[in-house]
Picture 1 (cartoon, rainbow, N blue to C red):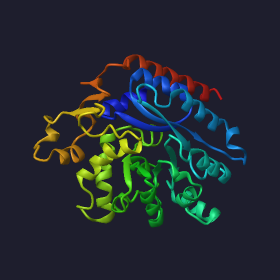
Picture 2 (tube, rainbow, N blue to C red):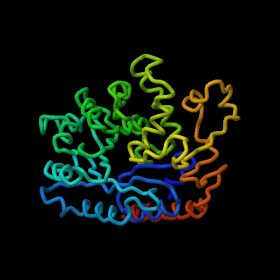
Picture 3 (cartoon, rainbow, N blue to C red):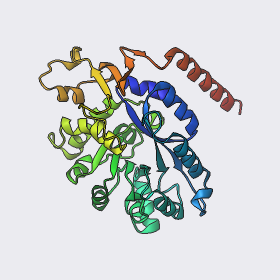
Length: 331
C-alpha cells in the first residue's frame, strides 16, 4: 500500500510487479483501486515437474482467483525470476505451459555482466537465446533490465514482440551498467520504464526514471540528439500499457480507459512552456503531479489520497519496521 501511494503521487496509474504473498498484494491493489499486472516469480533449484513447484502453484492460484478481475484492472502474469535462479528443465516446462495462453510472461534478464556471461559459459548461449529456445517468447513477454544483451538478443526481442523494462536508476545504483535503449529502439524493440522497486532504487518515481532514461543514451554515446522527449514519453505511457496487454490505455481517445494524470505547468521549473513534452521529460518532477486518475476515478489530488489513509498506513509501516528491527537485534 505504501508503494502504491508513492506511485500514485508520482503519476503512475498501472504497474507490473513480480513478488510473493500475492493475496496481500491483491488486497492492497483492490483497496487502493490501482491497476496492476502481477506475477508470482518462480525460483527452482531442483529438476522436477513444474506443477510440483510451490511458487508455480501459487501463480496458478492467483491466476484462477484474480486474472482480469476488478473490471480488468488486475491481470496476473506468469513469472520466472531469472535464468540463474532456475533449472533449465523448469524454464523449458514454463515455456511449454505458457505458450498460447492468456498470460504475459515477466522475467529478469541480463541485469549484470556476471549473470550474462555465466549463462553463456554454462549453456553456450545468452539468457535471451536460452529463453527463446525454450519457447518462452511464444507468449508476450516483459524482460526487466537487459543491460548486457547483445545485438542478436535485441533482434530476438524485436522479432518476437518482447518488451524491455528499462530500469535506469536501479541499474546505476547497483553498478550494473546502462541498458542500450538507443540501439534497441532502432531495432524496433518495445521499451517501457521501470523502477525495480524501492529495495534497489529507494524510490518509485516514474518522473525521475523518465529523466534518467532521456539523459543516459546521450551521455553514453556522446550524442545530444540520440533520443527524443517523444521517445521517452512513449516509454512511460503507450509502450508500458502495450507491454501489459492494455491496448485501451495510454492514449486519450474515445473508448479508452480514463487513466490520466494532471501536471502543474505553473511552477517555476516548468517555465517557459514553449515545448510541453520537453518540459515534462527534462524539467518536471513528482511535485508537479497534482492529480492521478485510474479508470475515470481520481485516486490522488493535490497531496491527498481518496482511497488510502496515509496517516494510518504510515503508522503501520513504522510499527512493522520497528518489530522487524527489534527481532533482528534480539538475534
